[in-house]
Each structure stands twice: as structure tokens, then as C-alpha cells.
Length: 474
Image (cartoon, rainbow, N blue to C red; front, side):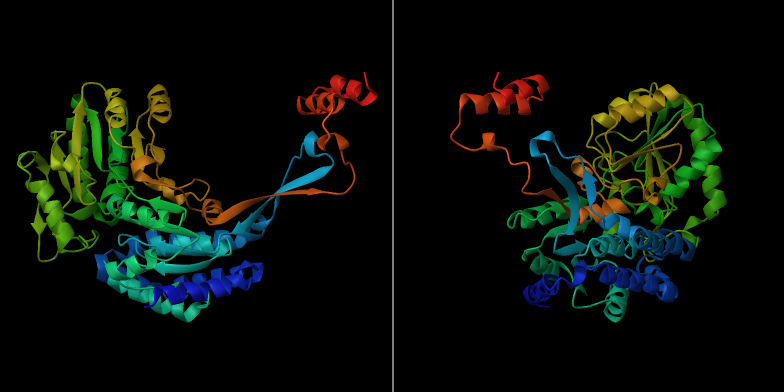
């Protein structure tokens, strides 16, 4: 791979104006849609190879969501591309003003391994819709999906403007040394800092889709069965907890713990059986390194006696059963880093309102969840918790709405995507003011006189009477 040559070729294509046309954008979006429609089996097989991801989960969370994003972009593209008329002011009268969205140029998308199909192509859809040339770098930790993406995009897409670069750290490093017009990175904060530092050398703007410890607050006045099913779906039903918006820990009151635990144990057995390690509905841990990382969290002396459900491990098949821990110390390893796996600690507080201060005392998460029937608590949660997104009485569904921006704040990331937010992320909003040769105001030009000063002060202050007086010389 010659990163410099690839960027040079794509800059030539972008410079020709090819990618700016509505027709080109539509043709490439339709090609992406064909990839998902014609190769669904190949894609889900790759996801199974990389993560043992259940076929239904792979279709719903990756293939279907990608197709929905594509169809939305095709439906709305003309409207998104249309200049937005805005008001002009008396200062520039007579004039008209508009905001014109224009592509940024040549952009780099560095994807993640946990949803390697969706998280690769969702930002690419936005970049293409906005009229950019794109290089996609899929994650090497999901090699089967990376290979499928390279093959299919090579077959279906305009490779003079859209390229896939496979590889690991050396290839990513070579790409980051180039000058881009935007970099979109999905992954962890450690690599995010490396990406940001590399981008700073060229003053390249960056979107960082990171993660964090996303809390779930559980009040007592709820339907425990429904709440628990929704927590399980967002935790273990999302790639076995290997998702940036998966519930990371639960906060509830001591009084609520027995009901909550009983409901969780019952529903987990219904979903995954008495031996969840044999369930075909749970993804495996992505690789041995992550298995060891999660095992280290479980084997920490501070939490070994805190496991109240699960904890079984199968290192040969890289599987860990859904595991619940109760009253883990705040200084334990499991509470110091994003878990990104099937372990779920429960923290207890004296009253549910204390959960808000507990969350606020920590870094801002990518998501925060609350289960309650108390409208006052709900409003306090919305007003006081700063997170990428909030969801009341469910988990993870916020990502399914194209009308909501998806992105982090603080340590959980910067920038956003989904729907028009993706289009805007890869666009520059160009300010355009149009004037004719009529309405020229001599007072703006030297020599500056007291009369001109009175006129301009009245004009800029919006003083209509003063403006009339200045015009007639009073």
C-alpha cells in the first residue's frame, strides 16, 4: 500500500468535480445498497467468523441498519444538498443570503471491530452523500469482514474515488501521516488520542466515536420484567456486551436489588438457557487478548466474591457467560475502565436520586439509561446528566433513530453521525451573500465625516428615527 499515492489519486478525482454531482452520489449510494441486498449471506457469514455473531443479530444491527441509512440518504439527498435561504440584514440591503453545503474533499474513515460492517459503511454513506472521496480502513481485528468489505467495495464502487485499505498498525499509521480533509474514527480513547495528535499536524478536523461507562439507573416503581428484558437486550443482546452503548453498570437502591436480581436471573435463563456457554444466541469474545482482559477484571481480588450470577468461562471457544456482580468497590478494576463485554456490576445507593451525583462525578459516557415511572426523576436525569445520548425506560434504541444525532461528549467522543447529521459531518456550510450594484451607501467610504458617522451609527443601532434625521441632515 502506498498511502501517499492513494490520496493523490483521490485528490485528482475530487478535483475533477466528479464526486460533487448529484448523479454520482446517487450511483454510489445505490451501489452500497446492492452490496447489502446481494451479499447478505456473505456478510453475515463474515460476522459469524469474526465474532460468532448470531445471524438475526447480524442482520438487524448491521445489514438492516446500513440499508436503512442508505435508503434515507437516497430519499433525502436532493433536500440535503439544496442551499438553505437565510435572512439578510438592513446592513447589507439590498441582498440575499444562503448557506451552501459543500463537500470537504478527501476523507478517511477508520472503523471498529465490534460492528465491523455497519460502523464501516454508515460514515461512508454520509461521506458519499456529502460528495467526498473516501478511504475506508476497516479493523484488522475483524479480518473476515474487512476482507469482504475490500472485495465488495472494489467490485461495486467507483474505485477512483472510494478505496478500502486493509492492514493493521503500520497501514493505519501510514494513512494518518497523510493530509485529509476530515478523519472519522470509531474505537477507544487511547487510539483516539493518537488519531487526534496525527490530525493536529495538518489541522484536520476529526470525529471521534468513542465509548465510556454507560450507566443504567433502575428505580423501584417500574415493571421489572420489561425493564430487565430491555437491559438484557442492550447488554448481552448487543454483541455480548461488546458495544459502545451497551449498559456498563447498574445503579439501584438496596431495597430494589432482590427484585431486580430475581428478574434478571429468570429472564437470562429464558433467553440463553441453563448453560449460556452453549447458546447460539450469544456472540463470543472477539479474540484471546480481550478474553484475558475481561478475565483480569473478573479475577481482581476486590470483586472475586461479588459474582452473584454467571461467571463461567470457556477460553478455548472465547466465551464468557452473562455475569452479574453486586456491590463492587468503586476502586475495583471493573469500575475504572469500560467493560466492553458480558460483565455487569450493580452499584447500590441509599436513594435513587443519589445515582445522579454518582454519574456526574465520573467522565461523561456515550449513553445513560433510566428506568422509572417518576416524571420528576426523569426530568432531573435529563437536565443533570451529560452524555452522548439518554434513553428513558429502554436501552440502545436511540441509535435506531436517524433524526437523533449519535456521538459522544468529553471522553466519550466528539462530533456526530446518523441521517442528515452524517451528511453535515462531512460537509462545509459555506456562507454566501449576494448583492447587486444598486443600493451603494457612500457613508461606508472615506473620508469619514460627522454626518456619515451619525448615519452609520443610526443604521447599525437600528435607530430608524436617527437614520431619517441623518439622511435629511438634522
